[in-house]
Image (tube, rainbow, N blue to C red):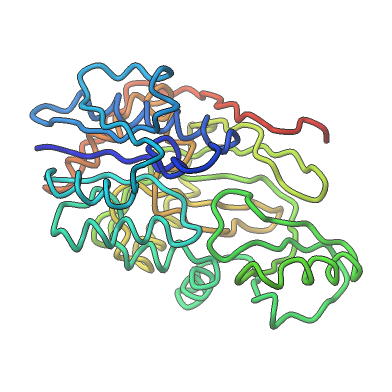
Length: 333
């Protein structure tokens, strides 16, 4: 089987503009982790797209590399290369419908997609639609409104784009003046949601999904800095606890509510004193993925390939926590 791996940041998604350094490090980690896992799978041939500026920083022996240069149309090159492969694994953010479009292109070529399909990305990749679906299935979540329909009330609030990845373009508000200023700034930036700013542990779950079933691989603790009213991910403690039974029912409920999820996906939670609530669902590889193998011995790439035939054989070789440091553009708190 010939597999094309396309990690959007490192694979040429920004080939005509400056590389966003804040995202390149995470993209590099995810690409290396994915290739490392897939390289161990028998009877597959790997092809990877790589931004021309990053060639010297990658050591990917045994992988067919196609370099994306400024003159290339990355979307067309992706489709051309995908047409010559049996399966495609895109890794991309949800904003601007990037991930959704890649999934559509793969499905239009009638190739195997090693991630969730377009319809699952459209639902889970939209925070407003996700909130509505979680509510319909009585899964605990955070109260959410479209910012255009919200009337200011006192307290702390957080504003997020409906299709944002990570903390991009999220803003904390604590006054009516903050709200008025922000809404003027966001008037031309698309749809945003607003939620009460809850205090609690930020936890992410690394999971596998297939046809309404789910397998929880590990739970991860996220630590943030707040800089100028914005969250910045500082580090993730992958596999931070040995007993994650309290999360199993949440994962099963999400599998039932989002039956089109397939392959690896991440679930972001907030644990307050009184409840565990789902914040969002990421229908793609997440940053936590890069340390799952080191922390547990589980080869996610192998498991996803096994999902093509049925149930994955999740082989836990160890149980330790591994901390992934996230580079910050501004360390001032």
